[in-house]
Image (cartoon, rainbow, N blue to C red; front, side, top):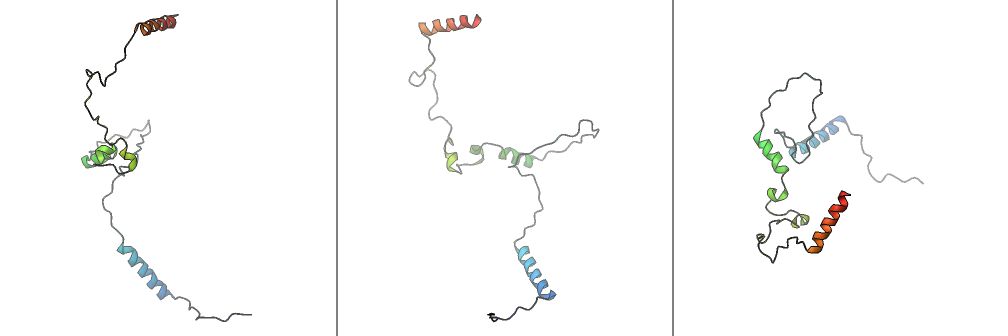
Length: 134
């Protein structure tokens, strides 16, 4: 049993309607579009520099270095404690403050335990040296 059409049949779109839809789509895209005029290398990606061919006779020209670009590159490659004032992730919180809590004093016997030799350790050191020579 055939089902009757419940609604109107769609008329085929003509060129004028298609063009109006296209113009509206382009206007929507242009509203959120930004024009970028300043281009630079991404400082967070590793930069691979390739050398010229070994037998090329091209003369190397002196290129002036851009100090702002070099600062950006050096800042991107520095450790996180120098880049940021506080840790950004919970993983960075471990070891963020790496300075010792108290200054180390070698003369303080409470915290300094130097290596000490007894008669037995001196004897064994000499024995190992003799065994190594043989």
